Image (cartoon, rainbow, N blue to C red; front, side, top):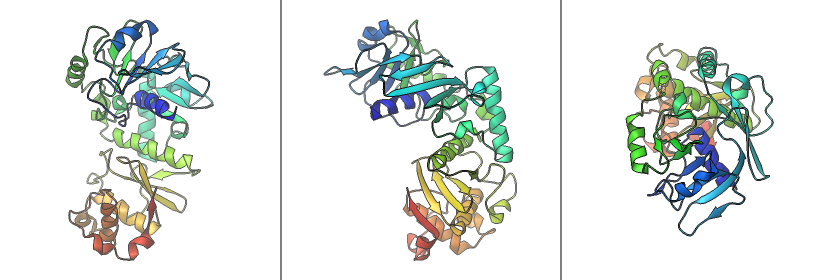
Length: 351
């Protein structure tokens, strides 16, 4: 069941992560159960696909076909609920009302209309300016739907990752997404081609706010730390900086404003963390290491950061994370040997 739930949430959020095969989409959601036979007879699914269809009585998989999973309810209607058997229930909510609703379990929040879009952008602007993130949005059981259309960008998305067929068989990557084709008429290659041509759709807000992808990464990082029991979490670059050295970097020259995959520096009380969105790993740091890491992220390199902080400390922290496979925009070729014993004092193990 864990793997099935993961497929469903990756389909809902549009996050990269589903294993792709040479044939078929990783995850397909049908709104109409009558379309199942047509889908199974197409090249839209392959041996490793997972198909969600209403009312299917049990999870099945043919010798050469996908896993077919039944669900009840709706995965597209805000205010509805989807259930997988009696073990998993997923609430679907509109963004605009979510701040006023009680969270009772796993919830997928959709930006479904212009009002939702306005509320989402207003909350993002507030977080950027003040460092205050909406409490509901960082709740560990909440996930935002369709992240690529909210500013995360199209990387890791597309018909080979996820597909949705509405009641009439029209195909898109998600409810409300651009129509890519018709079930029974279009091949996966055609859908992929149309999706690539339409790749700029839904990205105008990201063009106006190039930091939206980083905002979404920050929301995810806060959510992970809240799941570990932390509260009052701040994120560097959103309403301020942890250390005075990073705050000294002139406005407009910061290197950590737009790259959604660049690590994030977070803190809660006396605890500091570095979160790597690319791998999902989070490292605990003491305040000295956190201050050096923040300068590296903001200045963009050891060379640039040396104007604001001790070069030796920057090199040590940069080399530690380089050895861990996490780039802090450090200068190329920083020797791992420069860490010495001090690295173990500065940085605790990633987890």
